[in-house]
Length: 551
Image (cartoon, rainbow, N blue to C red; front, side, top):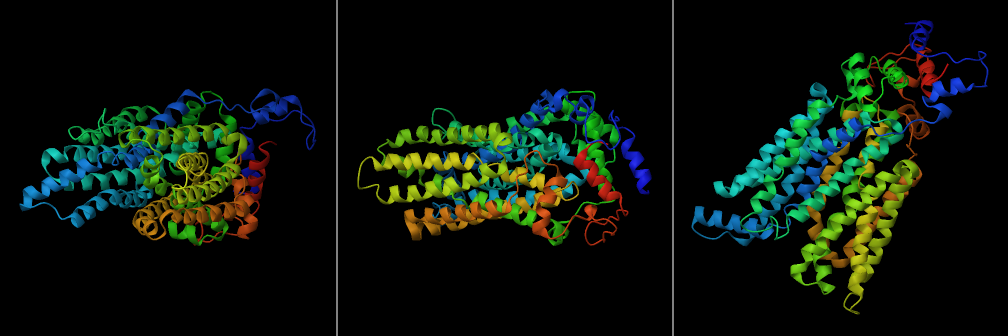
């Protein structure tokens, strides 16, 4: 296709701007055509379909991830007693303490191993099923894991509980890749950050729900602890019966299934309006650029020079997300509350405050992310965490010198949690969806998920040794990680708010010292990069079209 044919193809559905050709003056009618709203303002309304898709998708996905992070804390003594009874019945003697510790460590850490396996499965499943049906199939893992864990005491097999935790990890690994992809592809760029933050909000709600249901008055008793795991069926079943009534991702339908009619219908549903011509023009322009591109493998993405700094930034943010020390906070919470004079039987209720602060901070971030942007929330979040880690180190070291110092430690803990959830707790997932185009996104989420789960596993493995050797000074290690992350992001991360992929790619181009293949003019793209061969002149025309969106 030559430049003239391509131009006519792109211009066919576009309403012509009244006014002289080449004039810089834009009439009010032209301004309305460009923005879709009188006066040049874009609508930023959340349609009912967008709300349902985000809430149902997150409830059956990221909510379960957060729930499984906290649900094992309350029934720990009862689960260990169950392990001991099962061992004694099989072998005729109680379990050795070291063996019990090993079994419990495996029970907790195997969740991260399952998450890594799930992350590696996402690209293969998503290629054939799409975003929506990947989430639906994932509910099978959640339901089977819930049944295994809830029925393990009746079956007298603690292996069922361990296997169930592994399967639940697979569910989490798939969910934390497929859900952010789905939300980023169905949302208009004006609310892409707020919609993406729903993932983090529901993680926090899941953690809080696990803490709440673990109270002795609810399910945190010896006779009812298996039901804590059976509850997992409820969110999974809710998503299973609700999500089929919502459309697939419009970009997946257009780019990978070449179903323009289906993509148009999906956009109409998600945007709650009949005229989606402007949105389709933007997506079609990107589709024309990527018309010959195939899904990129992880190795190809790592080798691609034009996304090098995007990949490095995703790796850094995901590593800091797990290595910033929030898990260490949970380790010290009970002892700090005890030092403050809170009776042991009241500590589980006070611990609920941490889950509540998490949720409120995540909601706050979702409300302001489109106003403040990603950069300030992410850099500020890591910076505040480093500051409060320093304060917490001082108060923990001096907590025996005055009766009021432990209360400062409680304030420090809540401040660290709020700082994390206001930015670093959710934005890394949003950035992964924004940095990469459609053909690169599955591989990018595989890289991000792998770093996420490996870092999670490393923290669980090494933190006991760090804590034993450094005691309260272990928080200085996490303060250093947060400081390094904030400094890196300050110098490297561009603001992505309200930007298209082409604009974000251009912001990274100077650091990468390479342009994406589709932005090169007069040069072919080799099979080693994207397996596409844009024609001379056409890509620059498309790039100008995306930037101006008007003729």
